[in-house]
Length: 266
Image 1 (tube, rainbow, N blue to C red):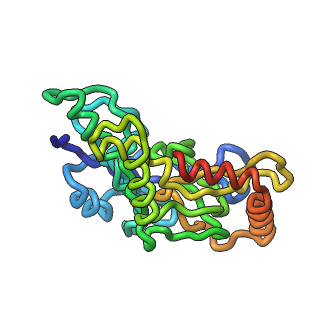
Image 2 (image 1 turned 45 degrees about the vertical axis):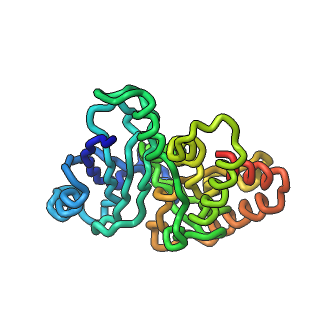
């Protein structure tokens, strides 16, 4: 089975904040300029020729692979690729983040579900794809393709834990296929319903969290949405705050247990 796709290329630019005072790390993005292409290569070749804001105002390009003949939500896609303002590939989500809404002709329900859920399987990250380590400060690209943060802004955060590697997911998948109940017998479908976009994340603490919080401050950032800080320098005060938050998480056994459960089950 095969479903044809097209590619949507969107340029995200920084824009002035809605409020008079807006302190880094939060700033807003707009992605009103998009173009559609038949292939990934066509979209990449078109980047230098698409008019937009000046290079200094550009934040990134996002290339979304969209299925033809299917109903899907605006934030869903078969794959996502994030490029730097100069067109250099930064990161990608090569698997689908999509739940079937309808069955395009002439496929059966079983055939269609096996195909889509097979494409949803997250096989882990190669070491070179894990650009950040615990303690690193990142920017979170908050756009519709980020199912945790989709509000069109950028947020500063500190990394608590990294996404699982290919070897780690392989071990978990093998254990799951040996021990799970009610498996269908279709490897792609079974793995795609269990190991998906929710595994492919950095555990983080965002800069907007109060340093004095008593609540669990851990959140998650999809791997392909973790960016290098755009500003030339993050203030020493902000770095110290983020490091204190990270140390608080690492010293709290209950929070670490919840983080571990998310890592295994989601």
